[in-house]
Image (cartoon, rainbow over all chains, first blue to last red; front, top):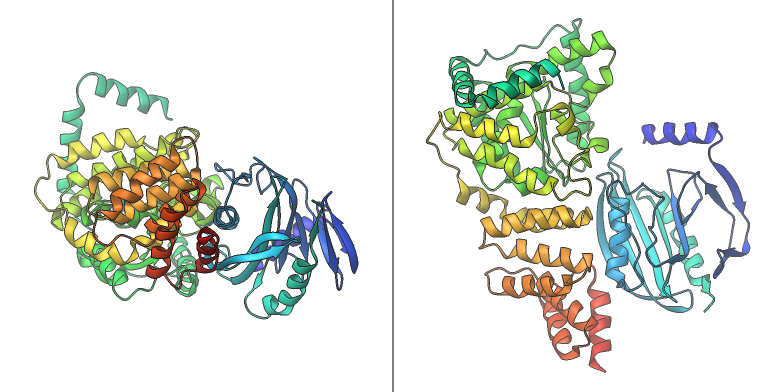
Amino acid sequence: MRKLLVVFALVALSGCATVNKMESGNQNIGERMSVTLEGAWNHVALPNQGPGQTWTMEGLPVDTLLIYSGLKDGEAIHRPGAGGQKSFNFRATMQPDEIVGLFEGFLSLDGSQFQLTKLEPATFGGEKGFHFEYSLVRKVDGVTLLGMGYGMVSKRELFALVYQAPRLTFFSRHKDRVEQIARSARVKT
Amino acid sequence: MNRRRFLAGGCAWCAGLAPTLALAQSLQAQQWAAPARFSRPDAATDEGGLWGMMDREESRLRRRPFNLKDPQLQPYIQDIACRLGAEHCPDIRVYVMRTPFFNASMAPNGMMQVWTGLLLRVENEAQLAAVLGHEIGHYLARHSIERLRQARSNMAAAQIMGLFGLVGAIGQLGVAASMMAYSRDNESEADRIGLLLMHKAGYATEEAAKVWKNLQLELKERPDGGARNPLFATHPAPEDRQQELAALAATYQGGTPHDAEWQKRVQPFLREWLIDEIKRGQHEETIALLTRLARDIPTRPEYLVARGETYRLRAGKDDFDKALGDYQAALGLEGVPAEAYRGLGMIQRLREQPAEARTNLLRYLELAPQAPDAGMIKSYVEELKS
């Protein structure tokens, strides 16, 4: 954990990352998705961070909410090169288990252990989608995180949010807040 | 590469001296005698400092959730290391780490890490013994101390850390992290010692060369054909290593591979290790690995099902057909995993074969009612009913 904090502190201090407050109320995410926030979040913009937005309540790397709005067929779910030799690309024909597999592969690229604990149908963005839950043992420091996500494909584009935080204290502290965001999500059809 | 060594080595092989060199190396190995057990160095020395650093790393390793403390598997792997280490056995402490890459390493204080990606890839005890013997060879020849002193002189101390367990960053390379920083001479010496230890422990030494041959099958499937792998830049190429080990093994005949015992012992972990392997998302390498394992161990349905899953997830041209072929072939074997039925059902559902899809998905739910994706599969079954 200490190593991670040092890395993120250095990144923040060097001015590479910018943090913006996401206020309560309606927020548009990309061109087609909107959510309603009950309480503010921090939106962290990192250079070359890829197609998803990164939000946090406690600060990185403690908790992370990744939001994808309209990821197109063939696009990677991570920034270019972050997948190493492998690029984890979304395909519009993917089934929910395959989309979860993308996140699984991406989140365990560094050798972290991802364990899917639930995958079920769910409504997301006002459409038929899926919900999943997982645990992740982070390779770098051995901390166990819990995570959950929602997703759906509309007009061949992926809309998803994935939240993860340490199992102790933090995940349960913000779980309901994330669930509320997921329920509020709307995608323009 | 050292030009002089390259030319000398190349000329020697071109001149047909390979058997002579191998014989000379084997004679050296036969003359080699294991040192007495090492005593703990004075903490004030450079070696004592390195031991202290490794002790701290080891105490962290013990607590890590990646450390598989399985009461059957850990003592089994420890026993193999002990047979190789002989009188050094009390100083060797094996940690089996759940990480899906080919890797083992040994620190100068006796801490040995063995990754599950290596355990998945070897086909018998002798192949694992070849890798562990090699690591014990580094330990007995005290290569890490040699490297520490060299690193100090050239200010590359960070390289030393790469030797032992700071493995996350290097893991994706898919090769033994511990082998990265040793010199070619160190590597060759560790290979020779490892082979001798295998022989003394009663293992079939010809299995050592197969480890490298098998690794090449995977490396060739990498997008860069393995060309950017540091192994090729700073160490003997796997082809050379395979040839040298095969030549050495010819002088140490006898011994057994212990196939049956190995396969029995790792069987309970196969499913988990295969899932970890598929998750890497390196489909081409995984298919090469599973094709080899399915060919060499044809009685295990797990390899066929895992390859079927990999084809299904890759979803390229003809991949669904290949996946169906693998699932069907696995159904003919004993102990087929439930995932075979799920895979069949998922593809049949996409191909609009509702009756077949429903039957197979129901069978999956019957065999794995607690599966994490049971909720999703049930929704498919409902959808297929209409």
